[in-house]
Image 1: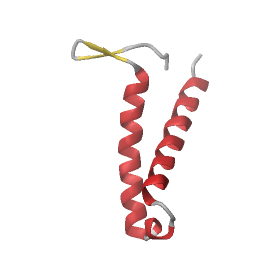
Image 2 (image 1 turned 135 degrees about the horizontal axis):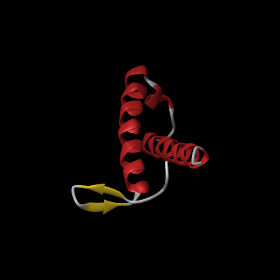
Image 3 (image 1 turned 90 degrees about the vertical axis):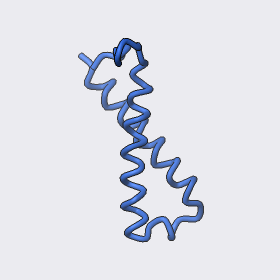
Length: 70
């Protein structure tokens, strides 16, 4: 994937914005799984833990996409 603008209904959007939204949806799903399994009750600060998971997902996804670039 090239890091070029994406055309969404005539509006050019930076690819990082699309990646951020996708990472946020993945974080929401993982947060619900962690809540059901009781993991969020075990961490010291649940909001900080969720933010850390979001940053880890986003950075991993960006690095994987950048490495797969020809």
